[in-house]
Length: 233
Image 1 (cartoon, helix red, strand yellow):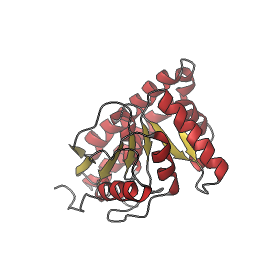
Image 2 (cartoon, rainbow, N blue to C red; image 1 turned 90 degrees about the horizontal axis):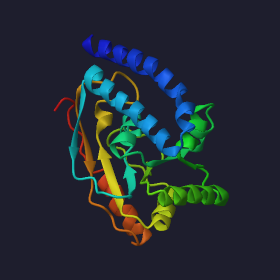
Image 3 (cartoon, rainbow, N blue to C red; image 1 turned 60 degrees about the vertical axis):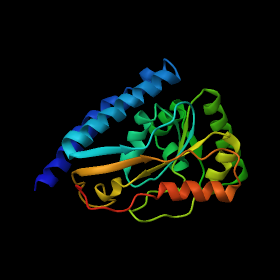
């Protein structure tokens, strides 16, 4: 019963207060990209507050986040990391699937923020567009964040990396920092979110310039390094 109450409170508070925050995006957009990033960071920090104090989920961080622009490759198990990493990584340019970029208002806001839109069909034109957006983000001194498995997965699942990762790795020539998480143990795709401690781990940076197979293998292994453990450990 307590878990159900926590979930209801989270949904009411987060989604209700998110409406005016998101709808005020055009005001920030009028002041440029940096204002948009600060606006998004305010929203994602608010999300983190509701996760901690309403859902009762605490985040344990392992490893060090390097300074300067890098290429982040993160595990994707829930909505949590898509929002939390925005503020935790100081507003990176996030690789976003095209379906989200087409949503009314949300898609416009994401593009103004500087999201890198990727087409899952990976056509030559789509890849060129993604590379162009990533080059622009790098020129601005921003890090780039990708969820290279391409979709949200359950704990223990480790599908192969999508082709877009290798293209960006080769083009960006930045250290690649794998990010592992086991948040899906507490935040399942279906059912109630449960209180407990989740781990966010920054892996050892993978240097640029490695052969594709080696880079993918090292990043994939580090992203999937966390073993499943009981919730609330």
